[in-house]
Length: 465
Image (cartoon, rainbow, N blue to C red; front, side, top):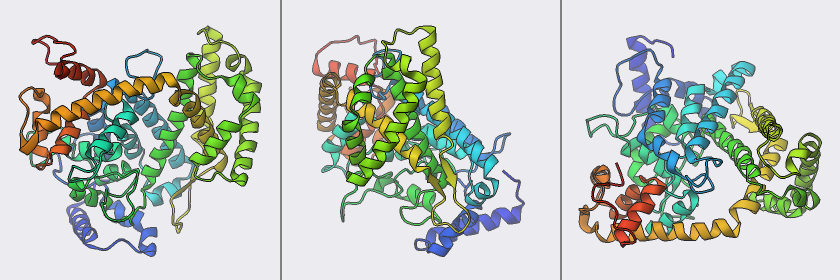
């Protein structure tokens, strides 16, 4: 970051005040938003800390990395239950790899398209920070936990249902503990980093057609408006666009790697008849028509030829962990990421959107993701496991909600969660969700067992520390 004089800082403050008071930007001003917004990107909502050797965006990245919310992700599911086997990625390992992809992608774009990167204000630190933060709000058991909490809370809370992205934003801006001053909650990140975490840059709304995804509850409206100053309605920042792509790349490649090690993917069957994978991928893209299926079929045929040409011995034989198999698996992963990291291109000044993704790479990622969905996520064994996980979340919610009526804090609630009561704004349902979403999966299972009498546990074991 450049050092600015006092007059420049004063001008930046005035611009920030002005931008918050205006209506959504016009298309013309949208094209200039990177320049206008650049003067206020490093502002923080609550406190300008004393300077050190780091830039403001470097501080953001470090605050997220060292947060207890990020540490908790080591105990949260990616696809298979955390702790089941060392071979599977946890949500934390996934986030670290998303962040690594994000940093390398930003560095490449800044080097190869320097003029466009400068125009759109691309920062590798902001992108890495957003990648590290993108899954902080995932509750125990990943997407099944998210779904159950949404079903339970959507008709009872003041802020709509439960959404992992919105919970991430709530953690960053309100729940995370960093300073002793309660008037300065959360990690107090810069405007640019907060905006980069908004994968779905709109708030939950009760009126109109409800969205399945959103990135902020109405309880975080002031923080949302702060982050979005200078951006049009539903217009993502460049770093948010890139973060979403990095997440897809990591998900498509690393999850495939996990299940290859477990011999869970029937490559011979897929190569022989890929029609179901292609059809499901077309549906996931929202375009299940003949033209889309034909295009995806052509992409798959080319991808399959490449896989069989380079890695047939790996994919069509039982994986036993030999040195040769490990080398091939690493090389396959590396080649995929090396290809996909070059897929985004920045658009020139004057464009309505800051970037585009190579369509072929987009299709390849979608097909790889679909293989995991079809052969892992939909498997009966995982479904049975998720059935039990649903019971754990539902029962925890029921007990905690019943004993938290009227702003009460149950005496058995772990001490670490007590402060969440003061941040609930007298919304009991939101308080319960905050408590459950602060647990690791092992903590949730152990707390459930103790509260239901399944196991007595030890009075010397607080479960949640």
